[in-house]
Length: 397
Image (cartoon, rainbow, N blue to C red; front, side, top):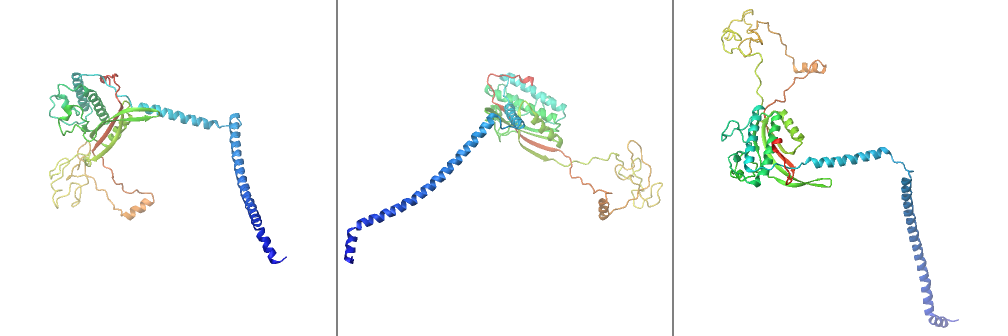
């Protein structure tokens, strides 16, 4: 077969040859894709088997728990029940913290009479507790030294009816705050402030009786599923006391059961250091005259003679005249002459050696000096919103 015949047959069967080669390529590609598909199927089957295994484990655990084969520690159950009881008790107690704001129904005349009696009572309690109060010269009777922020209302013949409930509540709060200060042993009440309510309160632009920087407002308090409507009334009180009374005041506000108090701010100012008390031995004459507690004229003069019983130039005995307390014995007459006690000055180095040996202690330093403190408290009194139709006898409190 020559070359021309080969070319003839190739041309004649070219289409068949191309189709045959395409078939071979398609078969190879299909084989490769089949391998990838089998690999993906295997991965999916393995994942399915894993999920089925997890499901079986969960079902087995549920069966074990339901059948009692898995034992639960009773201590854990009791602890969980205790936590639930504590939470429920806390929610119930939290709902009782904010109490209902209820008051008695009064007309204007009844409130003015009741207000005056409460103010007289607060002044009398202050006198009995020896608590100082601000003096207001406008008062007509000696029974009332301070009006406890209600001075403008005492001279009012008629108060608007819609203002009476809020004024009754403020009077109740002022009364409680004052009683707490009396029982806590404060020395004096410097100022009390409340928010303005009646038109008579607004006549004066500036007054030490009114708190104009904050106002009353309402809000909600969430305790569990309960939503409690509450009203917040601000007050400011400034008083003078010693440090121990501050703790008593704060404790009393925290322990108050009828009303919930919040201390928003407390400022403490030291008015001055305490003056050292005089000697318990009493005072003698500081001049040059002789007598009990005094000194002889020779002792006060340079080069003067020595007192009896002492050699010349010995000077005055310790505790002698020339300064307060000299020569006096508590409860008795003059002290007799005694010989001066010898003293020895110990250097700081020697004192440190004694301290290291446990034979001495460092010299104490007085770092605290009790003095009068002036305290300013910003209070929030929180109650539930007043329920209409409910009454409370204010005189019973």
